[in-house]
Image (cartoon, rainbow, N blue to C red; front, side, top):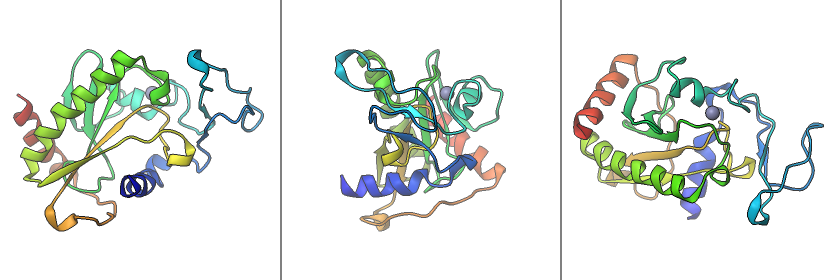
Length: 191
Ligand code: ZN
């Protein structure tokens, strides 16, 4: 898990130009003059967001889900969408998220969480097959402490090769053509 936490921390840094100010675990105090978090049922305090991506109007993943922003979509159904990470750790690094805006996994119903991971499971098989990976990681960050930057629930599906074992990664960039080719391969595995 330490490995995952480390990867997660790197994974979220500097993405989508978001502010370093992210969310904090519910401390009972609001951030930057925002109202204090509202407790949810179950006694858990809500995680607060104060980053520029907060709220469906400004959320890049909501824009991707509604096709207002372009992305290399590999999976889509009525409620969930999977698309290539723009700053991938490896070829095929995919993000799976609910189309409905929610900041963290605490904003989801249990059934929705099950559905999200079922989609991520399905996508992982296609991703691994498409890029010839030897394994994969699920990374799911919640809150500023986990370096979650985009304030919309998402699961990273990161394919890895044997030579990556135990290593941390650096973000890579692929050309639009390379991204589309990878997305096409994954989609064909899902078809
Ligand atoms: Zn959103």
